[in-house]
Length: 155
Length: 246
Image (cartoon, rainbow over all chains, first blue to last red; front, side, top):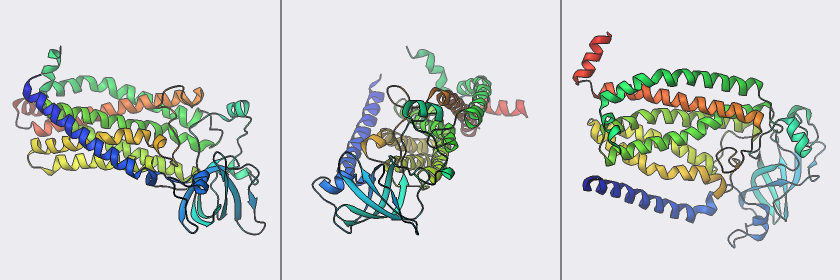
């Protein structure tokens, strides 16, 4: 490679490494703000030494604890518990739930902290995993039967 | 070692190469895309959790994967153009950018359409979605810079710098779902180890992916030919071509 090309190649590599390094450091510094949500253990034990304050607006993500979904008889009010690895947090929500909302499903809720472990949500989004399989396979492997959202009145 | 490549620095040679290769890409592209999509959208089994809504992945996944691969290809062309100062490579950057932008747009659009029924929202500012949106802006920026200068040589230089710097976004998009917690799920296909998609659904997906690859190649060759003609109008071989065809 002739020296002029080598010089240009070096310049390109230098610019990319510098900008890349700058962006990497920026993302690292912002990493806790880039996370979309708190997990239940982060709500209770705090994240990076900071426990969220009561009244703070936040997003929480976790798995709906099976058997914890309680629906109000007259309104759309629903409350359920979220967990990740240990502690659970209660979410209260008034509104329509997404089709994928089920017990054992991962969800992300936006709302504010009512007390240390209770969140009043104004939006609930369902998360799904990266596994795709036909219903028969899922039934054979995991014993999960696919229920059409329209037919699943009780979760 | 690279001697055989040297003639392809000439635009005339590249134009001819595109001309010969076009049918070999266009026809298989049409074939793979139609069979892959019909198989996926109509005959592959529905997902156990999401039902028929998961079928949109036969469009979403290939366009999302390839929006990133296309960017990598564009950045390599920009590097070649910058270091070896080959004008044909600059033209390739200009040809690849709009095709990649369209792929990114398809990925974002199908993702929003998929997100509404499944997640419950069209859009959420999580790391994956945001970084993919930035990718679209990078493509648009490259296109805008290239065309912003009257002197195309200078425009290509500026666009090339932007294209190269934007490469940093690619690992961020890919690893966003691992580095941060996001609403978007992890990778099903582009990871080490077995794909988390059952074989009945994987094959139509791979066929559709191949169809997208070939379609992108076809489109890039067509736009590259256009770009070459546009910039080489004054050359005798282009004028001869124009007279011979009309």
